Amino acid sequence: MSLPNLTIPIELPIDIPVLLHPAIVHFAIAIPVIVVLLELINLFFKKRALSVFSLFLIAVIAIIMVGTYFTGSTDGKEAFSALSSAGQAELKEHKLLGIYIVYGSLALLVIKLLFMLFSNIIARLFFVLILIGFTAVTLKQGHDGGDLVYKYGANNQAIEDVKSDKDDLKDELDELQEKYDELKGSVAEAKKESEAKEEDTPKSEDNSTTSETNTTESNSTN
Image (cartoon, rainbow, N blue to C red; front, top):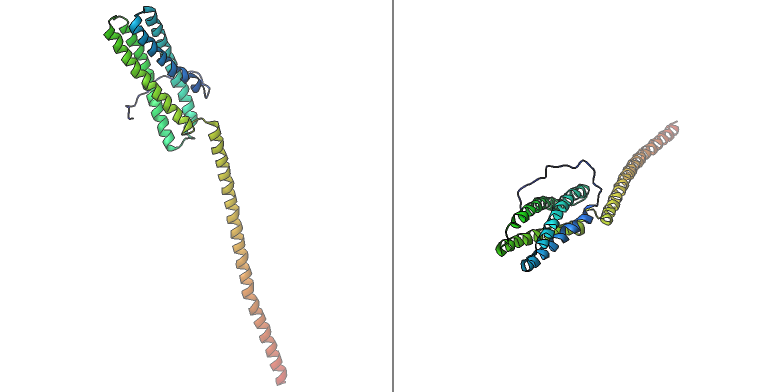
């Protein structure tokens, strides 16, 4: 999926706790499904009360989508560095689609207000089709979010603990390797010194033998 880059130029003045996103995202997925069912039912009953209640739920969806985006951004920043390159790419796509969903929920609210002015079945049916498309996108977004957690390990404490243990073991292995290299160097130096001493010892013995021979020959001559 390749979507044009889009941003939300708003920053909240408060810090959002980590792992608040999973608690909110369930509502972002479930409520659109409920609204679809309400709109389908209202195609037959044509009750204004149901339409007004649907409008209220769509307004709730828009608010929840905004909250889902900001909580997701917080969790995404926390998880990004621990993800693989493939996981990071998936997270970027997930965030971009989330931005589109936020704007889409606001547009859906405006469209609902406009379509409430029309009472004919064609207009309402067209709105239901738009709503189904929006809901399908939110379901896909939920599926992709599940992949980030279960496939790539985003903000998964158990996986982060394993990675932490792996890093600790790697550090210990590096330390042992350094000690091994130092010990290997010391052994090599000791071996060289030993070989040097062995080379010097025969020369000393030869000099002593030569000296004794010369002394013996000198005595014999005398």
